[in-house]
Length: 255
Image 1 (tube, one colour):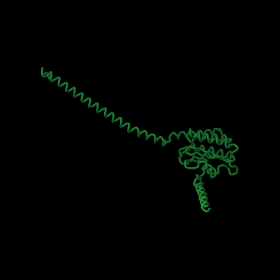
Image 2: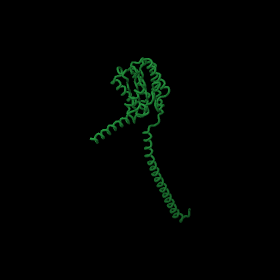
Image 3: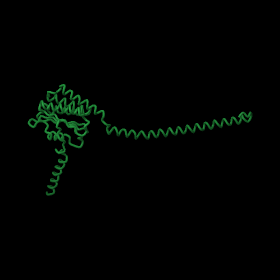
Image 4: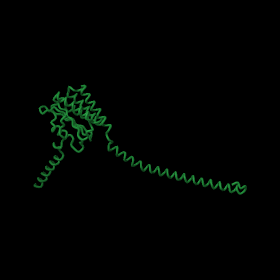
C-alpha cells in the first residue's frame, strides 16, 4: 500500500512538472507595443512607412470606438504551444478595455507563417466563433499566398468591416492598408534565398562537377586519339611518298 501511494505521488509530481515545462510563462512573453503593432526580430518584414501607417490607423480606430486591435509579428512559434501563447499574450497585454474587454489580437509567427486571432468577450457579439474561425482561415490562406504585410493588410481591413469601424473602407484606411501591402511586396523582393534553395543549389553543383570532369576526360581521350590518328596518317603518307620517289628517282633521278 505504501509503495502504491509513493508511485501515485511521483506520478502527480511528474504531471505538474510536465505542465510547468510545457506552459508559457508571463515573463517569457514580449512586452506590449505602445502603438498597437509589434514586429519582433526581423524588422524588415514591414518598412517604417507601412508600420507607421498601420499604427496610425489602429490608434485612430481605438480613439473613435474604444475598441483595441493589436497586431504582433513574432519570430518563432515552432517550439511553443502557439494557441496557448496567443491566449497568454492577450491576457498579459490586456487587449481591450478592462470594463468591456473589447479587443482583438492578431498574431503571426514569421517562421511558420501561421496566424491566430484572439477576441475579447466584449466583441464576441460581432466576432463570434464562426466569424473568427473564418478570419483565421483567411489569414492563414493569405500568409501562404502573399507576404506577411499583405496578409495583415487584408485581415485588418476585414476586421474593421466586421466590427463596424467608422474607418472601414474609408480613404484613410484604404491608403494606409494599400501602403502596408505595397511596402510588404517591396520587402519580399529583397528576401534572401531560402535554405531549401541553397541546398538545391549545392546538390546541383555536386552532381554537375563530376559530370564536367567526365566530359573533359572524354574530350581529352578523343583529342589524343585524333592527334595519334593524324600523326599516323602523316607518317604513312610520308613513307608512301618516299617509296614512290625511290622508285621513280632510281630511273630518272628527278629528286
